Length: 131
Image 1 (tube, one colour):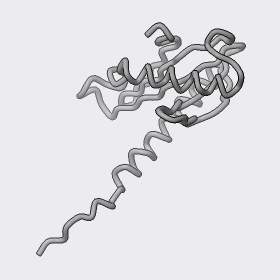
Image 2: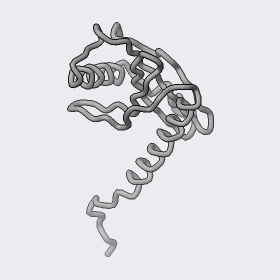
Image 3: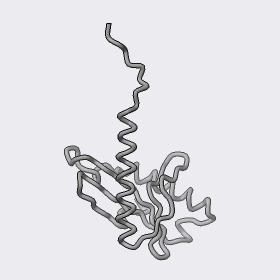
Image 4: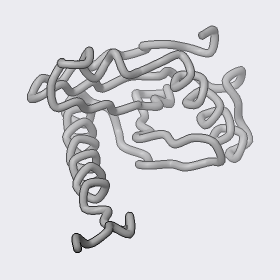
């Protein structure tokens, strides 16, 4: 008789998380070399997460890091849906509100770091609150 999986083997998800963390470190280093200053990583609020929060002079920069091993299904950039953008906007609004600010009172932008294979693409100001 063959063993039946209990569903507790999460080695695949652990590997995916490790790869994600490595790519977020890569993105952070890239942005720091471009002159941005790191503030926080993996900021979670109910309903969403922001991969990186950076500062670019007086501007808060909320960064979504997406990684795809290859472009077989459209690459990393194609995975940023309108729904994902809305989640990022809500999470950023909560983060700002926790600091007594809002989109109306501070400069901010939403950047995407899309990594497909070894290729990294930075899209500053990729979308805004009008999405």
